[in-house]
Amino acid sequence: MDYLSTRINSLPVSETLAMAAKARELRNQGIDVIGLSLGEPDFNTPEFIKEAAIQAVKDNYNSYSPVDGYLDLKEAICLKFKRDNGLNYTPSQIVVSTGAKQSIANVCMVLLNPGDEVLLPAPYWVSYSAIATLAEAKSIIIPSSIETDFKITPEQLESAITSKTKLVMFNSPNNPSGTVYTEDEYRALAKVLEKYPDIFILSDEIYEHINYGVPHFSFASITEMTHRTITVNGVAKAFAMTGWRIGYIGAPEWIAKACNKMQGQITSGANCIAQMATIAALEAPVSKIQYMVDEFAKRREMIIELLSAIPGFILNHPKGAFYVFPDISFYIGKTLHGKTISNASDFSMFLLEKAHVATVSGEAFGNENCIRISYAASVDEIREAVKRIASILK
Image 1: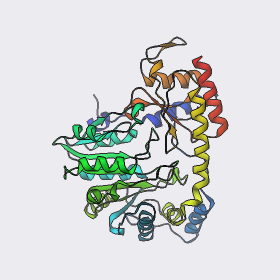
Image 2: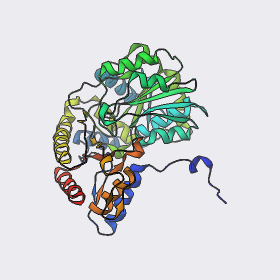
Image 3: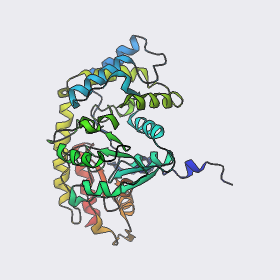
Image 4: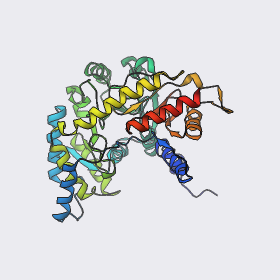
């Protein structure tokens, strides 16, 4: 008899974390595995942020924090939104959470009812559909391909909308494709949504500072969309603070209050030391993290050049984040070293078992023809990983 809930049984395992776990298993067996599966910068957290955390410890920040975050941090987030995004939020519209993943979960739990539909332009981050499932909503996938630079059109968006549509999740720069929507492209999508006033928009902007030439544009800055857009962000990616676990939202006040209520029964306030460090991160000029973005840009050019030389790998030119999302459909249906490749998951597992390189299947992101490769790794690791992939596919 299965005593587990239908809720947990219906929940898929995170493919990115599962692949990282498999890579660790092989490493524990003494196998040299290169991990290009996790979206985690290989930089250390900047010194000025670490110093702020140390000072917070010395200042005895060790008590429960307010559920929605320290006022000082919420004020810093408001200033950041104004400076970087042209968005006018007040502290009562901000909720700080234990990572942007919790921020997204809060929003879904307070907005979605059983049977509601959530539109996911694909490829999408793996947890979007899983969180929607937890909220008993239905994910509606809007497909794209490498030919369209992994972007959806206004026509596609409109055709996916039904009377049950409650939420659309946008993510730019995008994980896993690195695609960045331009202001004009977002405004064209907003024109469609203007006709449907009961649909809300979640705009995940966690990679906003990791972009290579296309100016970042926040969906909530479209006047007609401001009152029903929830902007999600955090410090994990741009500030190399993945383990600090701080995310936040800017939202209509009634949504922020609901998220605060939800969080009060789940985790309460986020880590007090990490919050104080985040103030230092957000108050600093963005130029203080430009050295990381510059390095990612170099790695992007290198990995695209190296992967493009492998037959059957088709790549776009991502404008943000630190991933490439090559189309590998050339290999689907083929037999490689005695293993039949039926889908992208087979191909990703083949690379792990034979080349000892960890990637993630595109199926986890809503695209069955691609794999995600993170270049948030050292230049030497990237070179060696691609060399192994090329060798095993010869």
